Length: 335
Ligand code: EPU
Image 1: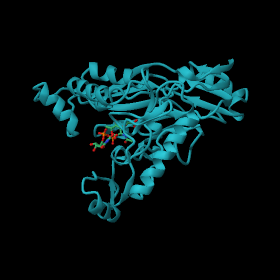
Image 2: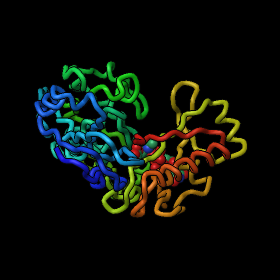
Image 3: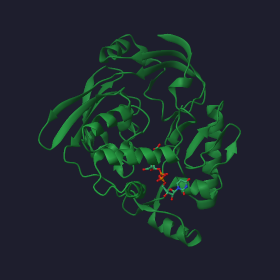
């Protein structure tokens, strides 16, 4: 247990706030000990890779970092393999573990920052694939009672960047391990435009899992800032889903407005486009800004406070509201 430590290296925005206390969980038994000793009954916060949080002030409690490691095969047959990974594993390491073996399912989710335990929280997704498509079950621990529970796909109530752990069970469970079912004779998902383009440039006609992973890595590296170089937490806002009728009205005033099928009767509009139209793309405000290649990603140019980034986010939200009448909501957890 460490006292008054800086969280700067534990959040990808690189915000320099401090935590009153900090500890790491390396085994499931560590968590049980902390629960028994009452630490989870006072102010606390579980942290994975810190890639989806914005700290706006010092945290006056205990930060518990999930450092549980391990990846293993649970069972396999001729067609599929069930793997289990501990919650503190780096997500991209898990992706590489599967890609190296030619197992398909999460190659489109290459290079997403963060940990395995955080992945189901927000049902991570990219380039046409979401975690729920390969998800089998997870083991979580109730942070007050220490009781272990298995959640299947239905229990998790996955949605677009949503799960039961962000809603009804928010703050109640610690995700200890996750099981995914992968394919040994995979069908790759390359419908997402940019993937097709990268593969075509490389003259790859029958892409393997490895090729798709490499294409995704190349796309991400070309568009998304590396948090080790420029502080950020990926997409700051979710892409809003608006009623079809509202979309058609907007289309009359803004013929170029992109839209993708979403929940029945709704259209998903890329928030990055809306933000760019409002003039924020590449714009710098003090030490913060909206990234030059992807307006949905807010960045810390160095030394920004969480409050400054939040102020920028509010200003962006307000201008999108004014111009389009659409409310965009943060995807990042604001603490
Ligand atoms: N666009 C712009 N200007 C911008 C950014 C985007 O006009 O500055 C428009 C373009 O029309 C583009 C469309 O938005 O065709 C979609 O852009 P992109 O493919 O970059 O995806 P996104 O909708 O902005 C989502 C995820 C990303 C994920 C990509 C790829 C959300 C909130 N974000 O972004 O996830 O990598 O798709 O699948 O759904 C993350 O969650 O942190 C994240 C990076």
